[in-house]
Image (cartoon, rainbow, N blue to C red; front, side, top):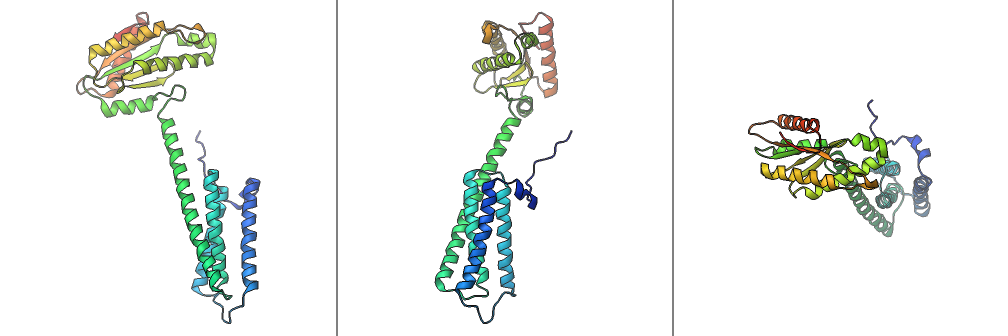
Length: 301
C-alpha cells in the first residue's frame, strides 16, 4: 500500500488545529498591524493628494500580504522553537514596517517615523534571514539522519543490506575476501527466551564482529541472523584465520541469560571479472555447505 507523503498544510481551516500559542501569535500580530495603521492614520495629517492608487502602493500592499502569508506558513510549520522565534520576530517587525510604509501613501510621515520604519525593516530582514538559515540547517540535519537510517540497521547500528551491497559494487576487487556469517539455531533462542533476548544476542554478536573486524573493513547485518564482513586488502589465508577467530570467539561468548550459541561462516574470495552477484551467490552456497556439514564451522567458497 502506498503511503500518502507528508506535506505542509496551509489551508485556513488549519487555524483551529494550531497550538494555542501559535493562534495567539497570529491574532496578536493582526491586532498589532491594525493598531499600527490606526495610530499612524490618527496621529498625522492626511496628504492633500494621496497615492493609494499608484503602482507603488499596490506593490507595498502585495508586500504586506506576502509577508502575512509567510507568517501563516511559519505557524503551520513543524520547526524548532528557536527557528520559530526568529522567524516570527523577523516577519513581525518586517510587517509593522510594511504597514507604516503603506499608510505613508495617504498620511504625512515625519522623519523619525521613517527612521523607525527603516530600522524595523532592516532588523526584520536580518532576523528572518537568520531564521531561514536555522530552518535550512534543521532540514539538512533531518535529511542526514534519514539517509543514515536508510543505510544502517536500526537494531545493531551496523550497515544494512543496501549499504553493504553499495560498498561491494563500488569496490569489488580481485582477491578481496567476503565473509558471510549465520548464527546457528537462532530461531530456538527466540522461541525459548523471547525476541527481546534474541535482539540482545544479535547486538552482542554485532559488537564481537566489530571488535575483530580491521579498521578498513565493513560489517553489515543483512537481515535476521545473517551478517557479512568485507575485508579489503586482506589475503585469503588471513581472512580464513580471521573467520576461525570469530567462530571460536562466538563459541566462547556467553550472552545474556547465560546463552551460548555458535556461528557458521563462509569465506569467498573475489575472482577477476567476477560480478558481485556471482561472488555473493558462490559464498552463500559455501555457507549452506557449512550448515549442512554440522554448523559451527568455516567453509571456503
